[in-house]
Length: 298
Image 1 (tube, rainbow, N blue to C red):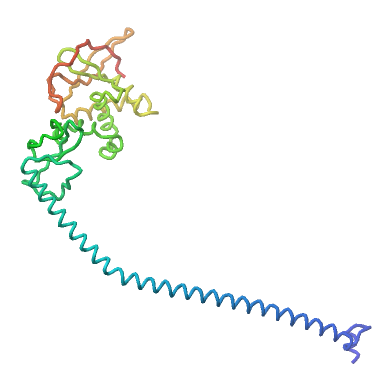
Image 2 (cartoon, rainbow, N blue to C red):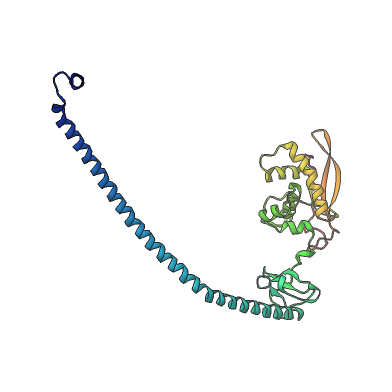
């Protein structure tokens, strides 16, 4: 008995501390009941939310089932439309083939080349004075005479001419070597006044036009910003090789000696001779003759 008295304190007996302990237990029970009530409310809320989700899921499942039932007749209608379109496409292709064999020129955008069956499978893309592209059988005259005179067919052009007709994006996609792209741009500068930066000069007797290696070097540096003078010199040689190759050697190279400031230089010139046969340009003398100028080779 003396031990219990010592653990409760010198002035308190176990009976005296009992009310405090009882009050503490009541508070603890109240806290637990409150927590239990909150959990019960949370559980009720979750059960209600779960019920709503189940109801929504049931509605979605019903909608999916409804759509699955509706898909069959839609697919059947699509199949019917596709068969009808294919039949019409076959009929149009047959009519176009017959018209082409009669000599017709058909607008390029209206012709699916892969679907047209003509003699020898040959179709030719041509341009006309109206600026539009047409398909025809080779050497067929249009009985309707639409679009004016026939321009030169793409396949009849020299490779350098074909590349020169492309925009920058198509040119990059078609040919990756920089010298070939520069050769195409250089040729375009010669034939297209809209380019503006044209290093070609009118030639003298026997020469239609020419461009010097030094002028070509400066032109290349204007086209390819940031390249060094030394690299531009190397590009000149490679571009000249590309010009010869892509023009199928319609161009000529001539080395001339020039003197400036008491120094003598050997200069290369790329020449387009008057008798060179260029598709669409033919042969002939230049409109005006002027003496060649003496430039220093770069």
